[in-house]
Each structure stands twice: as structure tokens, then as C-alpha cells.
Image: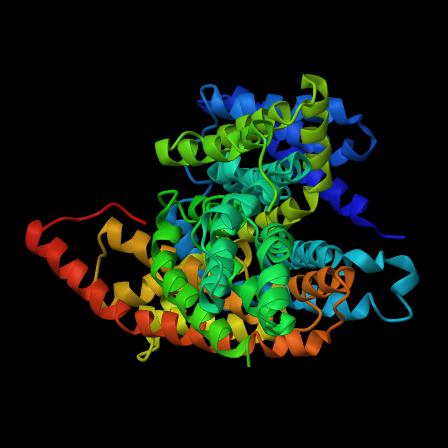
Amino acid sequence: MITLEHVYWLTGLMTGGAAIVNARDRSHPRWINNTAFWGLYAVTFLFGSRLPDVVSGYLVLAMVAFASVRGLGTSGGESVTQEERGAGAERWGNKLFWIALLIPAATIAGTFLFKSPAFAPHVDQKQVTVISLAVGCVVAIIAGYVILRPPLSAPITEARRLLDSIGWAAVLPQMLAALGAVFAAAGVGTVVSTLAQQWIPLNAGWAVVATYTIGMAVFTMIMGNAFAAFPVMTAGIGLPLIVGKFGGDPIVMSAVGMLSGFCGTLMTPMAANFNIVPTALLDLDEYAVIRVQIPTALMLLFVNTVIMNFFVFR
Amino acid sequence: MNHLSPGSMLTLVGVLIVVIGFVLRVNPLLVVTVAGLATGLASGLGPLAVVASLGKAFIASRVVAVVWLVLPVIGLLERSGLKERARTIVSRLAFATTARIILIYMAIRQITAALGLTSLGGHAQMVRPLVAPMAEGAAESRLGELPMKTRHLIRANAAAADNIGVFFGEDIFIAIGSILLIKAFLDQNGIHVEPARLALWAVPTAVAAFVIHGARLLFFDRKIAREVARARGAEPRSRQERQ
């Protein structure tokens, strides 16, 4: 049966490949740091499921050390020149788009295909989307080899180039998920919602609604994830006050409350995979995407508060 | 109303570290790691147990990194001229302005997400290889060489449209994670709801998100033109390096 473990092996092979390309590239100013960083990352994918937790923990700390002491770097040049890429664009034309769109297309097709009776017993049904994405990438690589006929090593040297330019941001979402788990275990959520109850006057319907929507956004900004904020805020403020005390509709409250959390997601560097990773991918200042999103997020948070206030007590 | 012991306030030390770290712009990976270690220690775990819990959580969330499997393909296509092709295509479309391209992408992203097709976009898969080069190319073919600052603003807007589209589209689909999470949470608290009704109440916000961000995008083309004009005025013969 195909499970997430196989997808992790594939990811491990890619990051391991990036480590090897870095190790062989002595012109790279930071080849030691980069090799160690991607090499250790590869270990967490290839063997992570079998390592004791403490060992994984030290691997992670070592990765962080390599990423922060002197730090990671990128090797100077592009693999091919601007002219060669221009010529490639002329030569291959829209075939390049079709190969790129093959990834999402194969992912979608996979999610349906792998749920069908013929495939269902062979694919972990809980992880169909992720497995489909991996399969989509493999299909697109094969198509790329067949159509573009690049050197055999091209995909991995190109992956190295992109991974190096993303650098530590590639690992940040995972690290934040780990932080969220530590926060949850330490009870940070309860402390925050208790503080909110103590300090904010909650004796009018609209005040409770505003506390809940703004609280969802702020707490999501702290945790980096509306999913982590939702149970805490809803158990702390939503259910006892909006539903319990003021008789509000739990459906409107939950749906709009979650979306208020999403407004917070748009404004926080803690939501790294949405806000920081794209800046690494697009070569931008760390907060560039957040700056664009903040006005929309604030206006939408206001609209959410109005919507909830209007409909939750009908 | 329960009262907080000083000890429980100590668990907020991680939040404090994160806020200070991000404000001072220390390497976020380092900030988050230190915050995790500090929170663990503050909550009374031993040092080894803290390292172990960090390692366990890191391994358990490897799934968020699987998206990097697109990089070999994207890299290969970029090497073969994907971005250049994207720019050429938009320069031939008369109606294609930067704002319109981003707006159309956001609409597609939101609608497909509402149908449950959230994997039909993303920063690595779509924004870097296609949407951002197209949006930049459109401005370039109308205004000529762009200042670096304007290029960056266009790219940031392409990435933001992807986020806003998917966030406020996906909740309309009943089988998405957040709807299932809400349902599971309410079930635990003895409130049983239909996922379809939760999804229905995501619609007003979805419409508002599109209207608000779409309206901002309508002014974006003019903003770009102004920025370019100002940059030209400041140093008329400035030739920025490529990209």
C-alpha cells in the first residue's frame, strides 16, 4: 500500500540530492552549511519515522544551528544563461505550460482515481491528496524528461538551486507546527482566553461578538494557524458567552469565527507557509506579502464582525 | 472566572520571544526554535523532554514539506524558459494588465477552492512559475523596464491573491479541513450541525473578500504606472539589472 512514508522517502531523496549537489560544488560560499542542512533534513524524511524523538530533536536543533550560525547561502550563477532560457521559450512554446499544469491536473485526477474501488485498497485513503501531489510531480518530471530531453541531473541541480534560494524558510512551516504543539501542551491557549475574559467587558452582545472575532484573529496571529485558535477561543468565549449567555446560533458563530481567524492568518509571519515562504520563492523582503494583505484583512475582519453581529442573534 | 497563577503566565514567554524576535527581525527559524524550547522549559518539562517533544512534533508535521516535490519540475521548466514564455504570452494579449491577471487568478483560485480543488494553485506550483512572471510581463510590455521596487510589489500582490483566494474559497466546500474541524469541535460539545450549513455561512465572507480585494486590485494598475513614472522622473536613464 502507498502511504505517506513513501512520499517522505521521495522528499528525502530530493533534499538528500540537493545536499550532494551542494557538497560537490566547492565554488559555493556556504557549501558546508548547505550540505549539512539539506543532508540532515533528508535524514528526517528517510528515517524520521524510526528515530527516537530525542534524536530527531537534536537533528532539528543542528539544522537550526547550521541555518543561523553564518547561515545558508546560494551559489552564484544560474545554471543556464538568460539567452538559453529565451531560446528555450521560443523552442518549446506552450508545451512548458502544459507540463507545469500537469502537476495540479494530475493531483486532482489522483484524488479521484485513488478513491476508486480499483485503487482504494492500495493507497492510504486518509492521505490521498498528498500522495496525489507526489504522484503528480513524478508524472510531470517524466513528461519533462520525455519532451525537453534535459541532462539526467538537471531536475536535481535545479531543485538544489530553488531549495538554496528558499533556504531556511523551507523548514519554517514545520518548525511552527512543532511550536504550536509545544504551545498547546503548555496550555498557552487557556492562559490567553482566560486573560481575554478577565480584561474585556463582556456584558453586551456586540462586545462579545467583537471580542470573539478580533480574538480569533489575534490568537491566530500568535499561533500562526486558525485551526489552533478556534477550539481555544470558541471554548473560552464563543460557546459560553455568544451561544450560552446570549443565545446565538453556533453555526453562524463557528463559520464566521473561523473566517475571522483566516483574517489573522493573512497578517502574521507565524503563518510561514502562506506569508514567508512565498517571499523566499519570489525573492522578496520577508514582510512584503503581509504588507499587501493587511488592509484587506482588516476590512474583512470588520465585515466579519458586522456579519456575525447581524445574523448570530436572529 | 478562573484566576491565573504566576506559573501559568510564564508559559507566555514563548509568545513574547516570538513577538520580539519578529519585530527585531532575527532569523525566524531561530526565533521559533528558541520560543519552543523556552515554552517547554517554562511549562516544567526537563531539557531532554523538551528536545524530544520538539523532535516529535517536527517529524509529525513533515507533511507540510511535501509541496517541495514540485521544485525539480518547476526548476527544470524554468531552465527551459517557462518564465520567459509566460511573459511573451501576456505581452501579446491586449487586455492583459497586471491587475487584471492577478484578479482573474484570484477568481479562479477562489472558485476552484470552493469546489474543493485547493491543490489547483499555490505559491510554488503556480505563483512563482506562472502568475508572477505574467503579472510582471504585462506591466513590462505596457510601461517598459520596471524599477525593482515595482517588480517586488507586483510579485507580492500575486502571492497575496493566491492566499486570499484560497482562504475565502475553501470554506464553501463542505469536506475541507476547517469545516470538519468545526463540526468535530461542536460535536464534542454536544452541538450537532450539518457541514452544509457551516459552508453556507462561509459565502457572505467569501463574497466580501472578493469585493474588497478586487476593489483594491482595480487601483493597482494606476499605482504601478505612478510608481514607474516617479522612478523615471527621479533618475531618467536608470537601467535596472534583469529581474
